[in-house]
Length: 428
Image 1: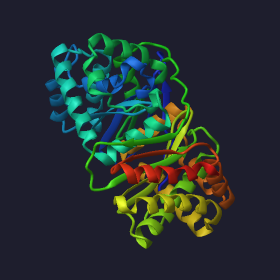
Image 2: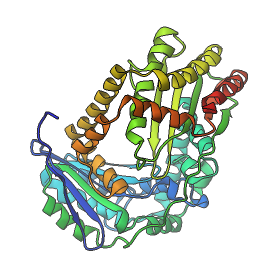
Image 3: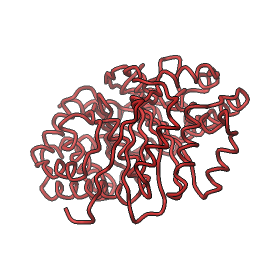
Image 4: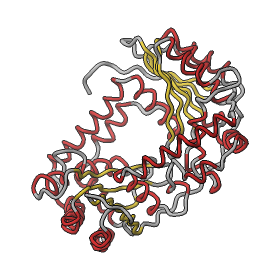
Protein backbone atom coordinates (compact mmCIF):
# COMPACT_ATOMS: atom_id res chain seq x y z
CA UNK A 1 0.00 0.00 0.00
CA UNK A 2 1.53 3.29 -1.09
CA UNK A 3 1.51 6.56 0.80
CA UNK A 4 3.24 8.15 3.77
CA UNK A 5 4.35 5.73 6.47
CA UNK A 6 2.04 5.38 9.45
CA UNK A 7 3.58 5.60 12.91
CA UNK A 8 2.69 2.83 15.31
CA UNK A 9 0.47 4.16 18.09
CA UNK A 10 1.96 4.23 21.59
CA UNK A 11 0.00 2.64 24.43
CA UNK A 12 0.36 2.87 28.21
CA UNK A 13 -1.89 1.37 30.86
CA UNK A 14 -1.99 3.56 33.94
CA UNK A 15 -1.67 2.07 37.41
CA UNK A 16 -5.44 2.40 37.95
CA UNK A 17 -6.30 0.59 34.69
CA UNK A 18 -7.01 3.52 32.35
CA UNK A 19 -5.49 3.05 28.88
CA UNK A 20 -3.70 5.94 27.15
CA UNK A 21 -3.10 5.67 23.40
CA UNK A 22 -1.59 8.27 21.06
CA UNK A 23 -0.64 8.71 17.43
CA UNK A 24 1.74 11.59 16.78
CA UNK A 25 1.02 13.27 13.44
CA UNK A 26 4.10 15.41 12.97
CA UNK A 27 2.73 17.69 10.27
CA UNK A 28 -0.04 19.03 12.55
CA UNK A 29 0.03 21.89 15.06
CA UNK A 30 -3.20 20.93 16.82
CA UNK A 31 -4.09 18.03 19.06
CA UNK A 32 -7.37 16.11 19.13
CA UNK A 33 -7.83 14.20 22.34
CA UNK A 34 -10.59 12.77 24.39
CA UNK A 35 -11.76 10.40 27.08
CA UNK A 36 -13.88 7.49 25.89
CA UNK A 37 -16.02 5.56 28.38
CA UNK A 38 -17.07 2.09 27.27
CA UNK A 39 -20.66 2.70 28.33
CA UNK A 40 -23.63 3.93 26.37
CA UNK A 41 -27.37 3.60 26.07
CA UNK A 42 -27.34 -0.20 26.15
CA UNK A 43 -25.87 -0.04 29.67
CA UNK A 44 -29.03 1.59 31.02
CA UNK A 45 -31.43 -0.41 33.18
CA UNK A 46 -35.11 0.04 32.23
CA UNK A 47 -35.62 2.93 34.65
CA UNK A 48 -32.63 4.80 33.15
CA UNK A 49 -33.80 5.27 29.55
CA UNK A 50 -31.94 8.32 28.26
CA UNK A 51 -29.68 8.84 31.27
CA UNK A 52 -26.42 8.16 29.41
CA UNK A 53 -27.22 10.99 26.99
CA UNK A 54 -28.32 13.30 29.82
CA UNK A 55 -25.05 12.58 31.66
CA UNK A 56 -23.10 13.60 28.56
CA UNK A 57 -25.01 16.90 28.49
CA UNK A 58 -24.55 17.54 32.20
CA UNK A 59 -20.80 17.01 31.96
CA UNK A 60 -20.47 20.54 30.60
CA UNK A 61 -22.79 22.15 33.16
CA UNK A 62 -20.23 22.67 35.87
CA UNK A 63 -17.84 20.92 38.24
CA UNK A 64 -16.72 21.61 41.79
CA UNK A 65 -13.93 23.81 40.36
CA UNK A 66 -15.56 25.29 37.26
CA UNK A 67 -18.90 26.76 36.29
CA UNK A 68 -20.48 25.83 32.94
CA UNK A 69 -19.34 29.18 31.58
CA UNK A 70 -15.78 28.69 32.84
CA UNK A 71 -15.53 25.32 31.07
CA UNK A 72 -16.39 26.93 27.73
CA UNK A 73 -14.30 30.05 28.31
CA UNK A 74 -11.11 28.26 29.35
CA UNK A 75 -11.08 26.08 26.24
CA UNK A 76 -12.11 28.85 23.85
CA UNK A 77 -9.60 31.28 25.38
CA UNK A 78 -6.85 29.17 23.81
CA UNK A 79 -8.78 28.83 20.52
CA UNK A 80 -9.95 25.28 21.21
CA UNK A 81 -13.31 23.58 21.11
CA UNK A 82 -14.92 20.90 23.23
CA UNK A 83 -17.71 18.44 22.56
CA UNK A 84 -19.16 15.06 23.49
CA UNK A 85 -21.21 12.26 21.93
CA UNK A 86 -23.28 9.33 23.18
CA UNK A 87 -23.73 6.10 21.26
CA UNK A 88 -25.19 2.68 21.98
CA UNK A 89 -21.95 1.26 23.39
CA UNK A 90 -19.73 4.19 24.38
CA UNK A 91 -19.61 7.89 25.25
CA UNK A 92 -16.83 10.30 24.33
CA UNK A 93 -15.71 13.67 25.64
CA UNK A 94 -13.41 15.45 23.21
CA UNK A 95 -11.34 18.59 22.76
CA UNK A 96 -9.18 20.07 20.02
CA UNK A 97 -6.47 22.54 20.99
CA UNK A 98 -2.96 23.58 20.03
CA UNK A 99 -0.42 20.96 21.05
CA UNK A 100 0.98 23.19 23.78
CA UNK A 101 -2.47 23.46 25.40
CA UNK A 102 -3.00 19.72 25.77
CA UNK A 103 -2.58 19.81 29.60
CA UNK A 104 -5.46 22.29 29.89
CA UNK A 105 -7.71 20.11 27.73
CA UNK A 106 -6.95 17.02 29.81
CA UNK A 107 -7.60 18.95 33.01
CA UNK A 108 -11.00 20.18 31.80
CA UNK A 109 -12.09 16.81 30.39
CA UNK A 110 -10.98 14.94 33.50
CA UNK A 111 -12.64 17.53 35.73
CA UNK A 112 -16.06 17.08 34.13
CA UNK A 113 -15.87 13.31 34.59
CA UNK A 114 -14.38 13.09 38.08
CA UNK A 115 -15.88 16.17 39.77
CA UNK A 116 -19.26 16.90 38.15
CA UNK A 117 -21.46 19.25 40.15
CA UNK A 118 -24.86 18.05 38.87
CA UNK A 119 -26.39 21.30 40.08
CA UNK A 120 -30.19 20.80 40.43
CA UNK A 121 -31.02 24.08 38.67
CA UNK A 122 -28.71 23.28 35.76
CA UNK A 123 -30.24 19.80 35.62
CA UNK A 124 -33.76 21.19 35.26
CA UNK A 125 -32.60 23.47 32.44
CA UNK A 126 -30.91 20.58 30.68
CA UNK A 127 -34.07 18.46 31.04
CA UNK A 128 -35.81 21.10 28.94
CA UNK A 129 -32.98 21.26 26.39
CA UNK A 130 -33.12 17.49 25.81
CA UNK A 131 -36.91 17.47 25.66
CA UNK A 132 -36.61 20.03 22.85
CA UNK A 133 -34.02 17.77 21.21
CA UNK A 134 -36.46 14.86 21.44
CA UNK A 135 -39.16 17.05 19.92
CA UNK A 136 -36.89 17.99 17.04
CA UNK A 137 -36.19 14.29 16.37
CA UNK A 138 -39.90 13.49 16.43
CA UNK A 139 -40.45 16.25 13.87
CA UNK A 140 -37.81 14.78 11.54
CA UNK A 141 -39.29 11.67 9.91
CA UNK A 142 -36.09 10.50 8.26
CA UNK A 143 -34.52 10.43 11.76
CA UNK A 144 -37.52 9.05 13.61
CA UNK A 145 -37.92 6.10 11.26
CA UNK A 146 -34.45 4.87 12.27
CA UNK A 147 -35.52 4.86 15.94
CA UNK A 148 -38.61 2.85 14.99
CA UNK A 149 -36.43 0.45 13.01
CA UNK A 150 -34.01 -0.16 15.89
CA UNK A 151 -36.84 -0.58 18.40
CA UNK A 152 -38.62 -3.13 16.20
CA UNK A 153 -35.43 -5.08 15.54
CA UNK A 154 -34.62 -5.34 19.27
CA UNK A 155 -37.93 -4.72 21.08
CA UNK A 156 -37.93 -4.24 24.84
CA UNK A 157 -34.12 -4.21 25.02
CA UNK A 158 -31.58 -1.48 25.87
CA UNK A 159 -29.89 -1.86 22.46
CA UNK A 160 -33.23 -1.17 20.78
CA UNK A 161 -34.21 1.96 22.69
CA UNK A 162 -33.58 5.47 21.41
CA UNK A 163 -30.51 7.14 22.88
CA UNK A 164 -32.40 10.34 23.71
CA UNK A 165 -34.97 8.74 26.02
CA UNK A 166 -38.50 10.12 26.42
CA UNK A 167 -39.65 13.43 27.94
CA UNK A 168 -41.01 11.56 30.96
CA UNK A 169 -37.88 9.48 31.53
CA UNK A 170 -35.52 12.43 31.13
CA UNK A 171 -37.49 14.62 33.55
CA UNK A 172 -37.42 11.84 36.16
CA UNK A 173 -33.64 11.87 36.64
CA UNK A 174 -32.09 13.70 39.58
CA UNK A 175 -28.46 14.20 40.67
CA UNK A 176 -28.40 10.93 42.59
CA UNK A 177 -29.51 8.97 39.53
CA UNK A 178 -26.72 10.50 37.46
CA UNK A 179 -24.11 9.73 40.12
CA UNK A 180 -25.30 6.13 40.41
CA UNK A 181 -25.08 5.58 36.64
CA UNK A 182 -21.68 7.30 36.49
CA UNK A 183 -20.21 5.30 39.38
CA UNK A 184 -21.52 2.01 37.96
CA UNK A 185 -20.40 2.45 34.37
CA UNK A 186 -17.54 4.96 34.13
CA UNK A 187 -14.80 2.75 35.46
CA UNK A 188 -11.09 2.59 34.75
CA UNK A 189 -11.14 -0.82 33.08
CA UNK A 190 -13.28 0.59 30.25
CA UNK A 191 -11.81 4.09 29.98
CA UNK A 192 -9.59 5.13 27.07
CA UNK A 193 -7.68 8.38 26.78
CA UNK A 194 -6.79 8.86 23.11
CA UNK A 195 -4.89 11.62 21.38
CA UNK A 196 -3.71 12.29 17.84
CA UNK A 197 -1.89 15.12 16.13
CA UNK A 198 0.68 17.32 17.90
CA UNK A 199 0.73 15.05 20.93
CA UNK A 200 3.56 13.92 23.21
CA UNK A 201 2.71 10.51 24.61
CA UNK A 202 4.63 10.63 27.87
CA UNK A 203 3.23 14.04 28.70
CA UNK A 204 -0.34 12.82 28.10
CA UNK A 205 0.33 9.77 30.29
CA UNK A 206 1.56 12.03 33.08
CA UNK A 207 -1.44 14.38 32.83
CA UNK A 208 -4.00 11.58 32.57
CA UNK A 209 -2.46 9.71 35.49
CA UNK A 210 -2.75 12.74 37.71
CA UNK A 211 -6.17 13.96 36.57
CA UNK A 212 -7.98 10.59 36.39
CA UNK A 213 -6.74 9.09 39.63
CA UNK A 214 -10.20 9.51 41.16
CA UNK A 215 -12.10 7.35 38.65
CA UNK A 216 -13.68 4.22 40.17
CA UNK A 217 -11.46 1.22 39.52
CA UNK A 218 -12.37 -2.03 37.82
CA UNK A 219 -14.88 -2.85 35.12
CA UNK A 220 -18.53 -2.06 34.60
CA UNK A 221 -21.30 -4.70 34.54
CA UNK A 222 -21.75 -6.52 31.24
CA UNK A 223 -24.64 -5.15 29.15
CA UNK A 224 -27.78 -7.18 28.53
CA UNK A 225 -27.23 -9.51 25.57
CA UNK A 226 -29.07 -8.45 22.43
CA UNK A 227 -31.72 -10.69 20.87
CA UNK A 228 -32.86 -9.81 17.37
CA UNK A 229 -36.61 -10.22 16.81
CA UNK A 230 -37.71 -8.23 13.76
CA UNK A 231 -41.26 -7.42 12.72
CA UNK A 232 -43.27 -4.45 11.51
CA UNK A 233 -43.51 -0.93 12.96
CA UNK A 234 -45.60 1.67 11.13
CA UNK A 235 -45.78 5.14 12.62
CA UNK A 236 -49.18 6.75 12.21
CA UNK A 237 -50.84 10.09 12.66
CA UNK A 238 -48.56 12.01 10.29
CA UNK A 239 -49.45 13.95 7.19
CA UNK A 240 -46.21 13.49 5.23
CA UNK A 241 -45.39 14.24 1.62
CA UNK A 242 -43.15 11.18 1.45
CA UNK A 243 -43.13 7.69 2.87
CA UNK A 244 -39.92 6.90 4.77
CA UNK A 245 -39.12 3.20 4.74
CA UNK A 246 -36.50 0.95 6.30
CA UNK A 247 -36.29 -2.77 5.68
CA UNK A 248 -33.54 -4.94 7.12
CA UNK A 249 -32.24 -8.06 8.80
CA UNK A 250 -29.99 -9.09 11.65
CA UNK A 251 -26.36 -8.34 10.86
CA UNK A 252 -23.03 -9.30 12.39
CA UNK A 253 -21.00 -8.27 15.40
CA UNK A 254 -17.78 -6.41 14.66
CA UNK A 255 -16.05 -9.43 16.18
CA UNK A 256 -17.49 -11.85 13.58
CA UNK A 257 -14.92 -13.12 11.05
CA UNK A 258 -17.42 -12.46 8.27
CA UNK A 259 -17.76 -8.76 8.99
CA UNK A 260 -15.51 -7.54 6.17
CA UNK A 261 -17.29 -9.65 3.55
CA UNK A 262 -20.65 -8.32 4.75
CA UNK A 263 -19.44 -4.72 4.61
CA UNK A 264 -18.24 -5.28 1.05
CA UNK A 265 -21.61 -6.80 0.13
CA UNK A 266 -23.42 -3.85 1.73
CA UNK A 267 -21.31 -1.35 -0.24
CA UNK A 268 -21.99 -3.14 -3.52
CA UNK A 269 -25.69 -3.18 -2.79
CA UNK A 270 -26.14 0.41 -1.65
CA UNK A 271 -22.91 2.19 -0.76
CA UNK A 272 -22.65 4.88 -3.43
CA UNK A 273 -23.85 6.27 -6.74
CA UNK A 274 -22.57 3.20 -8.60
CA UNK A 275 -24.32 0.79 -6.23
CA UNK A 276 -27.05 -1.61 -7.33
CA UNK A 277 -29.78 0.18 -5.40
CA UNK A 278 -28.89 3.70 -6.53
CA UNK A 279 -28.66 2.69 -10.16
CA UNK A 280 -31.77 0.53 -10.27
CA UNK A 281 -34.13 2.30 -7.86
CA UNK A 282 -33.24 5.93 -8.50
CA UNK A 283 -31.44 6.25 -11.83
CA UNK A 284 -33.30 3.62 -13.88
CA UNK A 285 -36.78 3.70 -12.33
CA UNK A 286 -36.91 7.13 -10.67
CA UNK A 287 -38.67 5.72 -7.60
CA UNK A 288 -36.96 7.90 -4.99
CA UNK A 289 -34.44 10.63 -4.29
CA UNK A 290 -32.48 8.83 -1.54
CA UNK A 291 -31.78 5.11 -1.22
CA UNK A 292 -28.86 3.38 0.44
CA UNK A 293 -27.83 0.29 2.41
CA UNK A 294 -26.00 0.27 5.74
CA UNK A 295 -24.74 -2.09 8.41
CA UNK A 296 -24.32 -1.25 12.11
CA UNK A 297 -22.13 -3.53 14.24
CA UNK A 298 -22.21 -3.99 18.01
CA UNK A 299 -20.29 -6.22 20.38
CA UNK A 300 -22.71 -9.14 20.09
CA UNK A 301 -24.92 -8.45 17.08
CA UNK A 302 -25.49 -6.16 14.12
CA UNK A 303 -28.25 -4.63 12.05
CA UNK A 304 -28.40 -4.44 8.26
CA UNK A 305 -30.87 -2.17 6.53
CA UNK A 306 -31.94 -0.33 3.41
CA UNK A 307 -33.47 3.15 3.67
CA UNK A 308 -35.54 4.94 1.03
CA UNK A 309 -37.86 7.92 0.92
CA UNK A 310 -40.51 7.84 -1.80
CA UNK A 311 -43.97 8.90 -2.87
CA UNK A 312 -46.73 6.71 -1.45
CA UNK A 313 -47.83 5.76 -4.94
CA UNK A 314 -44.41 4.25 -5.69
CA UNK A 315 -44.00 2.49 -2.37
CA UNK A 316 -45.04 -1.02 -3.35
CA UNK A 317 -42.86 -1.08 -6.45
CA UNK A 318 -39.91 0.37 -4.52
CA UNK A 319 -40.01 -2.24 -1.76
CA UNK A 320 -40.32 -5.06 -4.29
CA UNK A 321 -37.39 -3.72 -6.30
CA UNK A 322 -35.26 -3.35 -3.16
CA UNK A 323 -35.93 -6.95 -2.15
CA UNK A 324 -35.21 -8.20 -5.65
CA UNK A 325 -31.94 -6.26 -5.69
CA UNK A 326 -30.82 -7.70 -2.34
CA UNK A 327 -31.50 -11.25 -3.53
CA UNK A 328 -30.14 -10.61 -7.01
CA UNK A 329 -26.92 -9.07 -5.80
CA UNK A 330 -26.16 -12.25 -3.86
CA UNK A 331 -26.04 -14.28 -7.04
CA UNK A 332 -24.88 -11.81 -9.68
CA UNK A 333 -22.36 -9.40 -8.15
CA UNK A 334 -19.27 -9.01 -10.30
CA UNK A 335 -15.53 -8.67 -9.93
CA UNK A 336 -15.75 -5.03 -11.05
CA UNK A 337 -18.27 -4.28 -8.28
CA UNK A 338 -16.10 -6.12 -5.77
CA UNK A 339 -13.07 -4.03 -6.74
CA UNK A 340 -15.06 -0.77 -6.41
CA UNK A 341 -16.35 -1.73 -2.96
CA UNK A 342 -12.85 -2.57 -1.76
CA UNK A 343 -11.54 0.76 -3.07
CA UNK A 344 -14.32 2.61 -1.22
CA UNK A 345 -13.44 0.79 2.00
CA UNK A 346 -9.74 1.63 1.69
CA UNK A 347 -10.38 5.31 1.05
CA UNK A 348 -12.62 5.43 4.12
CA UNK A 349 -9.87 3.91 6.24
CA UNK A 350 -7.19 6.23 4.88
CA UNK A 351 -9.38 9.29 5.43
CA UNK A 352 -9.19 8.68 9.17
CA UNK A 353 -5.43 9.23 8.98
CA UNK A 354 -5.94 12.70 7.48
CA UNK A 355 -7.90 14.03 10.48
CA UNK A 356 -6.55 14.00 14.02
CA UNK A 357 -10.08 13.88 15.43
CA UNK A 358 -11.08 10.91 13.29
CA UNK A 359 -7.81 9.15 14.12
CA UNK A 360 -8.23 9.58 17.89
CA UNK A 361 -11.79 8.31 17.62
CA UNK A 362 -10.67 5.33 15.54
CA UNK A 363 -7.99 4.36 18.05
CA UNK A 364 -10.31 4.66 21.05
CA UNK A 365 -13.02 2.57 19.39
CA UNK A 366 -10.52 -0.12 18.46
CA UNK A 367 -9.19 -0.29 22.00
CA UNK A 368 -12.70 -0.62 23.42
CA UNK A 369 -13.73 -3.22 20.84
CA UNK A 370 -10.58 -5.33 20.47
CA UNK A 371 -8.20 -4.28 23.24
CA UNK A 372 -5.57 -3.18 20.71
CA UNK A 373 -5.17 -0.73 17.83
CA UNK A 374 -5.68 -2.48 14.52
CA UNK A 375 -2.92 -1.61 12.04
CA UNK A 376 -4.23 -0.12 8.82
CA UNK A 377 -2.33 -2.74 6.84
CA UNK A 378 -4.13 -5.51 8.72
CA UNK A 379 -7.58 -4.08 7.99
CA UNK A 380 -6.74 -3.44 4.33
CA UNK A 381 -5.42 -6.99 3.99
CA UNK A 382 -8.70 -8.39 5.34
CA UNK A 383 -10.70 -6.25 2.95
CA UNK A 384 -8.48 -7.24 0.04
CA UNK A 385 -8.84 -10.91 0.97
CA UNK A 386 -12.63 -10.84 0.44
CA UNK A 387 -13.42 -12.89 -2.65
CA UNK A 388 -16.47 -12.82 -4.90
CA UNK A 389 -17.74 -15.97 -3.22
CA UNK A 390 -17.10 -14.51 0.25
CA UNK A 391 -19.28 -11.51 -0.56
CA UNK A 392 -22.00 -13.71 -2.02
CA UNK A 393 -21.86 -16.01 1.01
CA UNK A 394 -22.21 -12.98 3.29
CA UNK A 395 -25.36 -11.98 1.42
CA UNK A 396 -26.78 -15.48 1.62
CA UNK A 397 -26.05 -15.65 5.34
CA UNK A 398 -27.75 -12.30 5.81
CA UNK A 399 -30.94 -13.34 4.01
CA UNK A 400 -31.07 -16.66 5.83
CA UNK A 401 -30.74 -14.95 9.20
CA UNK A 402 -34.40 -14.70 10.12
CA UNK A 403 -37.45 -12.48 10.07
CA UNK A 404 -37.03 -9.07 8.42
CA UNK A 405 -37.58 -5.77 10.19
CA UNK A 406 -39.81 -3.21 8.47
CA UNK A 407 -40.27 0.32 9.81
CA UNK A 408 -42.00 3.16 8.06
CA UNK A 409 -43.65 6.57 8.38
CA UNK A 410 -46.25 7.91 5.98
CA UNK A 411 -49.69 7.00 4.57
CA UNK A 412 -51.04 4.01 6.48
CA UNK A 413 -52.56 1.78 3.78
CA UNK A 414 -49.66 1.88 1.30
CA UNK A 415 -47.25 1.16 4.14
CA UNK A 416 -49.24 -1.84 5.30
CA UNK A 417 -49.11 -3.28 1.79
CA UNK A 418 -45.37 -2.61 1.55
CA UNK A 419 -44.82 -4.36 4.88
CA UNK A 420 -46.37 -7.51 3.44
CA UNK A 421 -44.03 -7.31 0.45
CA UNK A 422 -41.07 -6.94 2.81
CA UNK A 423 -41.72 -10.35 4.33
CA UNK A 424 -40.10 -11.84 1.21
CA UNK A 425 -36.71 -10.54 2.32
CA UNK A 426 -36.38 -13.17 5.01
CA UNK A 427 -37.63 -16.07 2.97
CA UNK A 428 -34.12 -17.03 1.94
